[in-house]
Length: 247
Image (cartoon, rainbow, N blue to C red; front, side, top):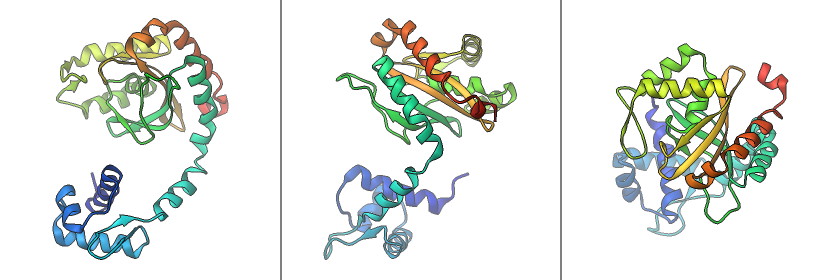
């Protein structure tokens, strides 16, 4: 269940990231659908905490550098992403494709870190970006869960799972695909979550939570090189410290 005030703070921050210019509070209220009085109070609180300022008379509000510095300080000490960054870099270099570390956020996939391919035509995303459960990452994360946890998560996606094109994904077929990936030791998607993008992923548990190493790329290119990409994915997975996976 969302906490309304917290959601509104993130809505304001994301709005500034989208428009990248100062805005008056009535415009912020309109675009975030926050009532005017509540929006004004929220913005004044963010000013008082040092996260917003007024660039000039009647110019509205804009974020201060405090948000950047706080985020940088937090991310610089993230133990999990720091440990996985060399592995993601190795996976990207071995395949030439975008590599990512993913976990679950409710019934969606969220990227914790992304190492983008250096190729001109590539799959692009960023940390904090979301992907559907129909993706290779979603299948791998489901595959890492115990059967009861897997069913519970899929139940939360009901009444239907959808592909990127909007087509309904048959749940029984989808579950068989997840099961097959568990047997194979890796999972694949071929445009179900993003059209013309294919993915490969290997799921695992850390402290009982599901994570996945992910490769994303233009579909034709990844499928052409799938055998080598799967080999690189499993080799990088094997470099995760056993003590971490056993925890």
